[in-house]
Image 1: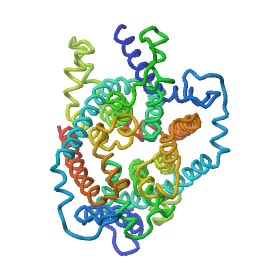
Image 2: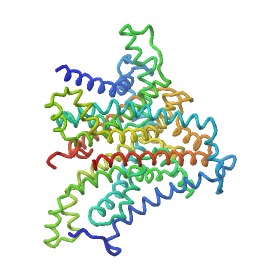
Image 3: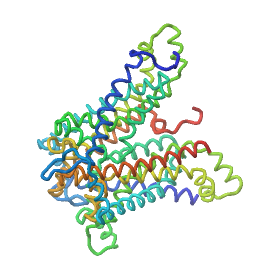
Image 4: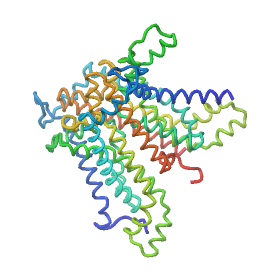
Length: 266
Length: 284
């Protein structure tokens, strides 16, 4: 009994510490005056409105959303054929590409960022807006690659055998049998890459930091000139968006399974 | 459908695009960075091809040694603290009902994917004089007047552990979720207290997982590049910050690249060790 109380207390404390910085920022974001105080003095949602009305903040928000959507889509386009190929054929050499896809995610991000900086500078595209899309797609390809490998791994091969026996070719099998089964994994891979691209700073900064302002870059630049409640409002919006996306993944997909806990009777 | 080796161009076609993308946009940039590390810096901007090791010689300076040992020490401290808190936490987490587990996972994933900019901003607000936690201490009568707790080493450490904790839980989660529950039940039946069963059965059974996780968190913490700038003082700058600084503000790409190559070697060696430790567990 005592043990259980202590456990709940510890879990509650951890939840509180994890939430505390976000709660304080949420409090700061509704201050009436342009001051950084908590508890907030007065109540105003004007700073949230400013995120959408101020051209600088709105521009950064749109840039971030566009970059995240395009790069997550490209990441899925790279990961899908690779994961399918590894599942469909017996080709041990192709595992090398899977390892390549995992590497940028494991190494400290500054390394990948520096690699892209040297690369885009060498090909004369340093600062072009589209380079950040390609860079993020390659940087985050790990996520759809992992979810899709899980997804293909979970496809019951006897369905595929049945379809093939009845004369379906690879393309038909993929479209009618495999695709519906792996769709949740495609979506969660996209969502993971999308959220992480939205929040990514160093690669974006090194690649297009001087020509394009994504939201994290905008927040960091604004921090140099001191705090504004707008920053807090943007942070709250971002945190909510992130939580909503993961909430949707959990709602439509099997989160414990995606994160690697296989059910006992699996 | 027979799963055999692919033959001919048509069967290889699907892998062409991913392979091309990964080679062009990862292998080439990565190799280029290694090449740049032996290039010669041209005063006033860029660099030209050469084969010099001057950039690597700078590793021998006391300044670099200081930054390096601080980075490694800090990452080790963060890894130890994160695993120390996250292991018992995850152990409890996997025993929760499914719904509660999912709510925790969504919460942890949300924190994990937060930008370092946002974590740094949130923590510096939490530790600030006007909006910070010290106001609460004052209200509770624990402190005379509010004060700023950031930037400081403590603030940096708190921010880093905050960032690393969800990562640690998610790395530990699969291993703990798959741990045979009968193992602990047997210990309990034989008369162990829950605490004793945890330390004498669960921890030893997952020793290699703990080692592998600690190394992964160490590499993760080594990669932090913004928190030292936002929550620490200049003496708390890590290798990642120094690399960014040299590449962007000092326009010394060759030196930045040399340091990055060094960081890659350290990280890869550690990840290799972690994989080895993880594999031992699977065969055991």
